[in-house]
Length: 222
Image 1 (cartoon, rainbow, N blue to C red):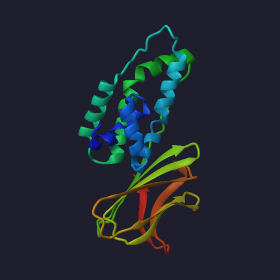
Image 2: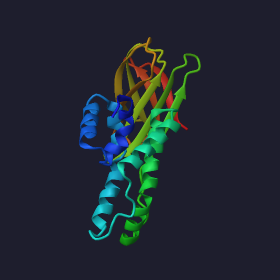
Image 3: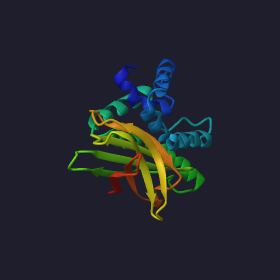
Image 4: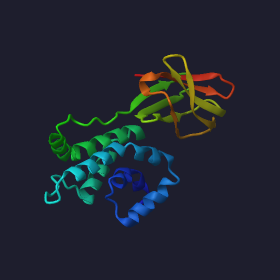
């Protein structure tokens, strides 16, 4: 596993198709990569469905879909090559590819149980850009059992010092999602993550503020 490929192995690791050596290297990478750690959580639903399929399939019946490591790697590499707009956008497309790849077995398990198609929670995006300073923010939120998992990508920050991302509820309540030390001379985008007890549908907007409470940017949904 070469270093540039490690980020694209989140799906392979989540589905358990990496060999022992690659899995060890990826786990070592996870300790220093908060972005991959966040992405790994988005595969919980897929792994749960695969486990359910395994439990529902009789031992004498061969799996209907058997995607080997080589096929899965080609899917991951092809998706990453076509999608370079943003890290969060690549994640959404990769998750969609995983659902399509195992859609057949899920449908059969669901028919045996007599239920509807299982729903995979979709991430919501809030975006904002300050035309005067060029600062751009992308907030991605996914509902969890405990509230909302939130990631922030901030580019060309015009502020320096301690800043915070605040989730403002529709009822006017506020929750601090995350804080960071901003650098005005930073070239690349800053990516950080946090969480809130508010559900996505309860959030009206996000605000980027200084430690003194001055609002630098308001990020709203599309």
